[in-house]
Amino acid sequence: MKKILIIDDEVNVALLLSKFLTRNGFDVSTASSGNAGMEALKGGEYNLVLCDFRLEDTDGREMLRNIKTQYPKTGVIIITGYSDIKMAVELIKMGAYDYITKPLYPDEILNTINKAFETHYALVEEAENTTTVVADKSKSKETKKQVFASEFVAGTSKASKELLRQIELVAPTNYSVIILGESGTGKESVAKSIHLNSPRHNQPFIAMDCGSLTKELAASEFFGHEKGSFTGALYTKIGHFEMANGGTLFLDEVGNLSYEIQAALLRTVQERKVKRIGSTKEIDLDVRIIIATNENLQEGIQRGKFREDLYHRFNEFTIYMPPLRDRGNDILLLAEHFLKIANSELGRDVESFSPEVIDCFMNYRWQGNIRELKNVIRRAALLAEDNEITMKALPLEISNFKTPSFEQSSYSSFTQEAPEVKENRHDLKNAALEAEYETIIRVLREVNFNKTKAAEILKIDRKTLYNKMKAINLK
Image 1 (tube, rainbow, N blue to C red):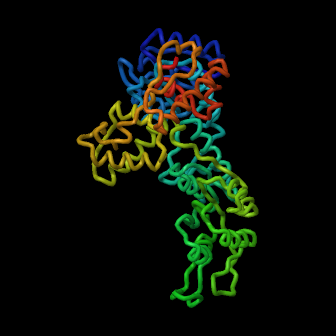
Image 2 (cartoon, one colour):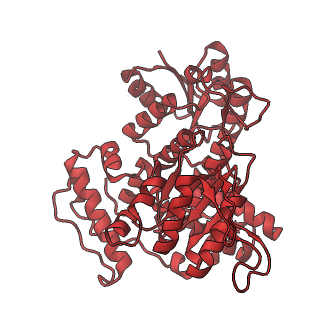
């Protein structure tokens, strides 16, 4: 039986959690202080620890450090209040599996614990089968590589974990990959991660922005040219295919290429040979191709803008990038990451975000996704007056953003019609939010108010659903 230790100085909370988890098949023990918790760990092999962040004799940071040092195979989930979310995100970076915010919801707790036991995060049942190290040629073939680009941040949301799983699956293969997603979701960082997890990680990764290519330049950029092959060809140029030989070629916004260039690309991809403009010599290619687009290529095929045969050459594996607004508390994880980068760039020491900023970040729509968040953090780090980013440092479109306010009456029973937005109904942002919340309410009704099922149908994680429900006082 899976053993869980609950460390919480609120006796009633620990007792209720213990009874609930026992009914769900776990062997549960409790401790009312940090010292008592460490003593309990000495007496038995626990698979998982649920630890309150604020204890009378210590805090979650110190407990995590002690547990991971003395019992590295034991997983840790932090129980925290909403005001401590920033610190909880930091604890995840230190090795905690996840965190649960108060007030505690039974289905969220159970789902998080079950997920913990299913994953490779430092749990006894998984430890013997989980080996993750930086890619190294001297390691055995059985060693699992987990090398990620420096700008890739593996989040903790359901969408991020699924994205990570797909990267790990496809990276060791030679499959061509299509990465689909909105602008700014981090498609290039995922492409780099796939490359760095592949056997080609020591070979070139060449990125090419197809959206910036003119019809005249595209052929030369892709295939290269010989000196004197056309007017203005003053020197021999090596094309991107040749530069990426042996490695990975990443083609961003491939839907913008002209139909003629697509035809030339098709031949190169099929034959795995390239010939510079003005040359008769064919060069053998060993290139993995990853493409990315925010357009619907299948619609492009129907409109005659994109070649169907080229699409199927590329489409050996498809990855869908989740928008930032559907990644829940990954927003805070990414914000912390970008703050560290901004501090390094600016030579500053901004440490944190105010609670108002955290709340604003969690409720903002982030239409520009990760790229928008990164730019906001860089700007805010520059404008911060002390070691904390406050609302004053945010752009007006974010600090003035308001979640639509709904009528509060009789909503606990879900019996009335969807409430009306009090904001300007001609405002597209408010119209979109109104439609979003109406969809949430409809789905909750359909699944008899099971929030876990509702989150799966809505394709968001549970924390995101709880935050959206909280925004309109939906209980």
